[in-house]
Length: 512
Ligand SMILES: Cc1cc2nc3c(=O)[nH]c(=O)nc-3n(C[C@H](O)[C@H](O)[C@H](O)COP(=O)(O)OP(=O)(O)OC[C@H]3O[C@@H](n4cnc5c(N)ncnc54)[C@H](O)[C@@H]3O)c2cc1C
Ligand SMILES: NC(=O)c1ccc[n+]([C@@H]2O[C@H](COP(=O)([O-])OP(=O)(O)OC[C@H]3O[C@@H](n4cnc5c(N)ncnc54)[C@H](O)[C@@H]3O)[C@@H](O)[C@H]2O)c1
Image (cartoon, rainbow, N blue to C red; front, top):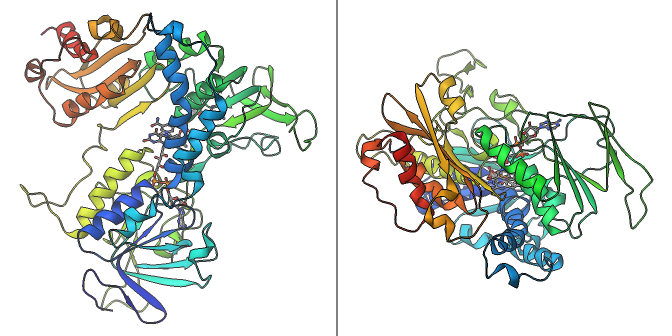
């Protein structure tokens, strides 16, 4: 098999590209587009919608549904504006805006970005079929009009990139499957709000959607979280502040509790599914109209043909710092006996985005997509000539939970830094203690917090809670990634009156 970059070949049975990407979510899209821009011939195989979970059932619809409640809450904190908020949140208009944002659940708006770059989109379900080979079942697509239903075999000259994402975990709780709980897809795609809702899991999905639905009009919302606090992976104060705000707006938080059983009280009718009752491990029962399960994600590797290259299905695809899959069965070596195979590192299989389990965030998947595109296209570091490495994955992952108050964090928590053996000191100040916060309204809450590596005098973690703190985060991300010494940061003067003056207060509190 031979070919020049930028061309596609077919021998009738096998179509050959430089690169085959499986999955056109944010990670796969970015990787495919950037590789095509570099002149490679690229096929991307997608069985649902170009844009993936984020565009249709994740980031975009969830943030759209949160926005009306956020704006109203922010206006109510501003004397002079508060009195102008006289009506109720218009739930129907919020859902209509969500429908616009998800393009009516069509990917027509997303496809041109790939096609304009010359990427071939193949509708169907992709599966590895051995070294550098991908089989596509073109009957398995939600866009049958673009498929002739015939099986296709694709060969990749340079690389196969797995970007198949995840789906919601449904824990094996007795009765849970039978009550047909909501997951992120049913919740972000809802067209009505239930009167009462139980949310299982107080992580990112659970907290955002619990508050979103409360503000959209759900009368009773209860979150059941197995760990001792909400957002258990963040600094302890973050989950505590979110829980306090939730309780104040009528969301009940049952932390440190497990659901042991679920049942529906009555049989479903056309109009009504009947109330659902969940039993907790302390014997309490909670009755609701819907239960949302938000307890984490399962990688889409169950039926991806991983076993054909020596990897184990049903788990995240482990990768090295160049995003190459670890443990891929290497090709038969010349001179070795027929059928001899060696297990070890091979260089053609990459896994990016949620499917590698490193950081289940759109921006991190896209970052990994850019890195893999550069590696496959042969770009090297201008200074060292080295292959690109995933620098941000090691202790510099930025994340924002879009609750009110928001939780925006990058790098290590204080506990994680200590666990990593660092000698750290943490400082914190109230986010509302600066003039920039006062002009934004009254009753604002939140904390700004830095974790400083005492030996190097650099920031290894930062967390900001409060209203609209998401835009503070990138300054912290730059400080963490660039390892800027505190004494240099002292000369980065925050403008007055902005909330970024918390940086000044934090450095002063540290002792500068
Ligand atoms: C409710 C919710 C809210 C979220 N909000 C945010 C947020 O605000 N910010 C943020 O950064 N992250 C957020 N996330 C996480 C974000 O959605 C994911 O990190 C992101 O979608 C991962 O991108 P991906 O490309 O790796 O996978 P996905 O988006 O899951 O895309 C994978 C694609 O692969 C396709 N696919 C799978 N298997 C095959 C196959 N065998 N053949 C062909 N195609 C296949 C799928 O159909 C899908 O299109 C949220 C998640 C949820 C659930
Ligand atoms: N704003 C954002 O960037 C955003 C928003 C939503 C999701 N996401 C991403 O999606 C990923 C998945 O989110 P998620 O909320 O599903 O998972 P998660 O891992 O963030 O949270 C799941 C929570 O469920 C709890 N849990 C697990 N099993 C339980 C059980 N049986 N009973 C009660 N609680 C239980 C866990 O302790 C955890 O707190 C996140 O890791 C995040 O990276 C990001």
